[in-house]
Image 1: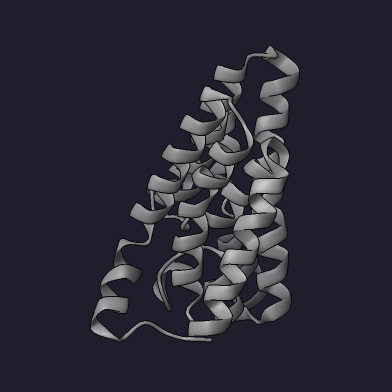
Image 2 (image 1 turned 90 degrees about the horizontal axis):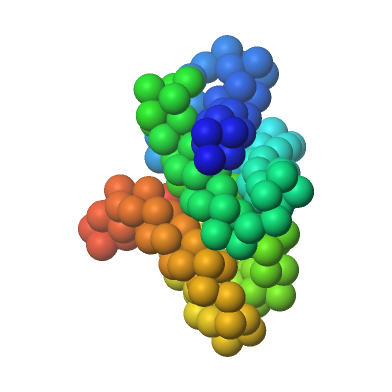
Length: 186
């Protein structure tokens, strides 16, 4: 779990923006270190690289747990730990990203069909509303539902539920801005 947390804590978005333009990504936009904020601050290419690296760290953490333990419960715990690491990274004073790309990487490994279905939901919401945050919240909340429809794995369903709760919690500022009508659109 410690290894998964530390993998999740690697702040790729922060490092990319710091290296590219010398700024702290947490001081602009949503204050998160994720792909959307990086894209707005350092360009689309930097955002895409952040998205891919954050997803890869999520997938890597659960693959390592699977190879080392072969335990569904440990893999589920690693899934949560890597998302917690991304949202609350020790290296950045526990101020990181929203966990969406990292969570997507986790569940692309553990439940790829559920992620693809949630991805369709995400895209539909974003295209309809132009709010990435709303698409992320609804997409994350949809993953446990799609896993429940496709699998009878209790550890996987619990990990998906807790992961969705973490991601929605990390978006609490976005939820407030959405309610006030001040959230940035794409």
